[in-house]
Image (cartoon, rainbow, N blue to C red; front, side, top):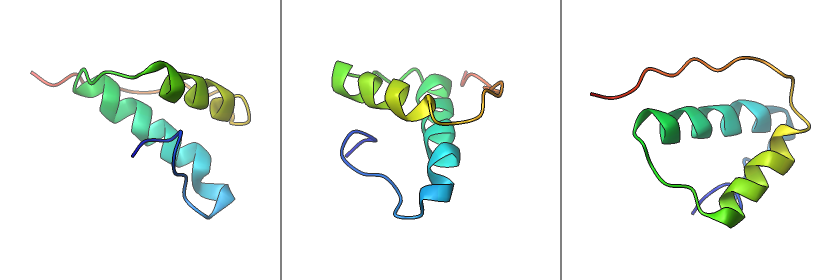
Length: 58
């Protein structure tokens, strides 16, 4: 299940959730399908524009 299928019920936590989701996917080089990517872009548009810090896994 990904962000296209489920979000936390607390709307105030959604930006944190999708930020954490994106950081984990990037850190571990995990794939993102088109539906998931579209949902992330749509949801992120409602969030503050802040830089993400990602430490890539070795």
